[in-house]
Length: 232
Image (cartoon, rainbow, N blue to C red; front, side):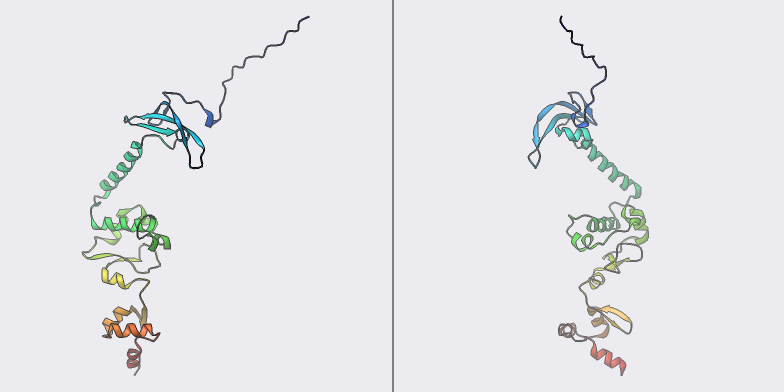
């Protein structure tokens, strides 16, 4: 007697795939990109291979994109979408205050770059030392401009406390000479409760700069005679 093997019932459920295995076919859209065909696999830095797709952007540009980037949504165009966002942001800022070409606006931009952009040549003297732009001014040029006012000719922004941040109460417009005297490298001296750098004291007291500098190098009080004269 022949035994009849029971047939396996056919399931009507749709097969589910892990996200990384979801089939991708020509014509599928990811943001502004439409898949045309599969491209040769790409190699990562560690040698692992990754699937890639040839895609056409809405702007007409053709681009090879890693499949993982399409699925994760990290790549949604050939780059035109990001450029449009950046241009829109710049345009909005320019329309908001109308001062994008003023001196005070360039001071604000430079202040933010040296505090927040490691690629800036002055970052090691500002951002790397922990110097920051306060939250009130970081994304609000108008607030910064309202506090500082127009930049006077021949002046630049100065922090009164070199260890402090760019914030209300710690900044002012100063001449380049004034700012040069307010640096970490200057020797500060206090006479009768007034603190000034050596160069400024030399001007005020009429002392020769060369003589005062030699006294400092020798570890002596540079203004001994002045103090003695005032105490007499």
